[in-house]
Structures are given as structure tokens and as C-alpha cells.
Image 1 (cartoon, helix red, strand yellow):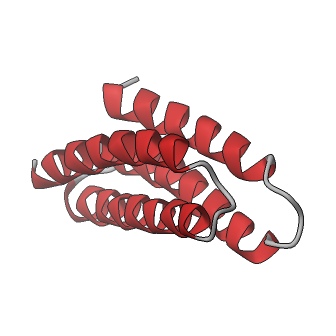
Image 2 (cartoon, helix red, strand yellow):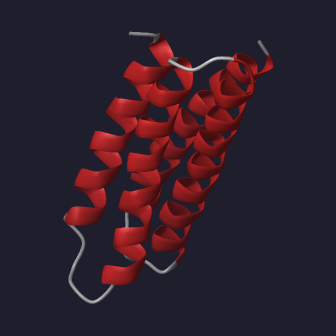
Length: 107
């Protein structure tokens, strides 16, 4: 398993735990963030096991999901629903995943 897969799984696990602990009433945003985090992991793993255009496309989709997850987490923090420090820590790690995916998609 590549480092990007390990990091993506860790961030997804932590991000999902964070949003699941939020108070009820924000189900749509919570679900969207969870789906984006799951998409990062699944599209990364699938992309790494494909070749050429398929690989590049799936890794690009995973990178888009990283951006979506980060935006959703940021929105939760901006609304005062999630702790800004936790979100910042996750966002830093998501940026690392995004950079790794970018480099891998160029191969």
C-alpha cells in the first residue's frame, strides 16, 4: 500500500469521526463531507490500480474529492459546528494528499 493510500485512509477515518460527532440538524452537509472523504480513498486506490488515462482520471477525481472534503470541513468550522483547530489539522493533511495525487497523476 502506498503512503498516499495510508494517509487518505487516516484522514478519512478522522474526518468521518469528527463529522459523526456533530450535533444533529446538519445531515446533508455531514453526509456530503463523509461521501467526499470516502471518495478520496476509493478513487485513489482504484486509480493506483489502473493505467494511463483511467489512472489519471481517477486520481484527478480523488483530488477533486479532497478539495470538496476540505471545503465542507471548512464550512462546518465557519458555521461554528466543528472545532477550527481540528479542521485545520485535517486540512493540512488533505493538502498533502492532494499534492501526492497530483504528482501520481502526472506519471
